[in-house]
Picture (cartoon, rainbow, N blue to C red):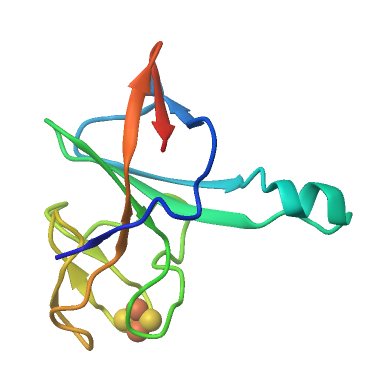
Length: 129
Ligand code: FES
């Protein structure tokens, strides 16, 4: 089972993308900066989170863009996360292939999962948290 991880997401939901900018059956990559209070007051650069948004038709899933094999981002080209038949996510590094739930079904990390984040929708936006 993919892990649902919202432990790093505190406070109000974070807008990710307008729902109108998503296309059924396609993926988008987005990068956000987490509004971490400790980071704000330390003067350090905020934590960045690289995400994959997968509009599967009847649902939208959001995964951390880090392959469970060795942690690399999945894509080589922007927004290109899917197999040719668009049925699975695939990592461009060593071809780990993931089903709709983010579980690796082929490649070097079978049974391991992408980290999935909880989302909501609000006023036409997909929100993280
Ligand atoms: S880093 Fe993704 S398959 Fe190796």
